[in-house]
Length: 384
Ligand code: PMP
Ligand code: GLN
Image (cartoon, rainbow, N blue to C red; front, side, top):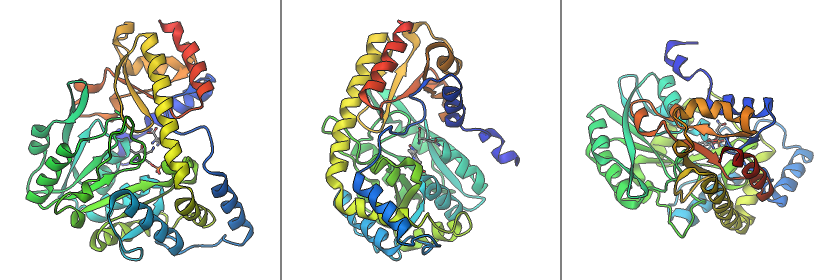
């Protein structure tokens, strides 16, 4: 492995899922739902397989899917993109992130990454050979907010991009408009772009609204917005994502991704297009169901004795195991599958410069059937 990837050798998701399998634990670590997406989407995929959609599709994605993506995004954000020049279908959001960074960031550029981060951001910056600058979120009055001073310190004339993620993995926080305005102001001041990971934009709770940084003044022309069918439609294993933005930025990502995967599995594309067109009600119901799941898991974790950080988006709850006598959350997480039969993910691997702020926390995924959460609860009560 090259030196620049050595710190990213094995993802925490791989490690925790391996332990979950080894000890037959309930996997509340890696975030994936345990029920399928809409029936009509599965049927459309089967039809596409039978109807001969089995050779290379166009590199940017089939036109039908690009049109459906643009329509979905316009309904969510009001943004209007050209399906031909401003839309790129990718192998999950993961490839969209990597292609955006590799295709748009020079070796001598800097990229701002806010901690805690989704782990692929730092690996993407490392693959691009660029320099990472760290900013941070902080806990403030029961909420999670941007530390604006840390962000200002991280920006410089060499800043090419900032990676933005809301609703936020791992914390579950939904960044308020004011925080996004601070990021946008720095992007404009330093002529930087925003690579905005919004894969959980449809999963906000308690009436909290998702704001896309692309909709703020002056940002449409400097933002790539990233989403994923995996999260919208409970098909994380299909690995279909996309990015949208101004043509000059999409072009950079398109150039890079041609040599990563070239394109995305052909029979799955018409199926996702079908679901984006016809299953919006299913997506709206998913949000209500996920809010219920969050409430169930929050009740269970509070009952066991964890301190919770209230999350208003995503699949994830942030828990502090300190009240249970835990002093090393990362080590504790790695023992949990064997000792208790439940898996969770520690925060430490999602931090670097600001490890001290966050490494006492762990992340539990609640995107599971109620009976699975209840069984996890029975097992976790051994800790109480
Ligand atoms: N970004 C975030 C914030 C995520 O949580 C995930 C995975 N759940 C991804 C990107 C990757 O998405 P995909 O599986 O579509 O590659
Ligand atoms: N994005 C999912 C999570 O945060 C899964 C990530 C992965 O397996 N790479 O849990």
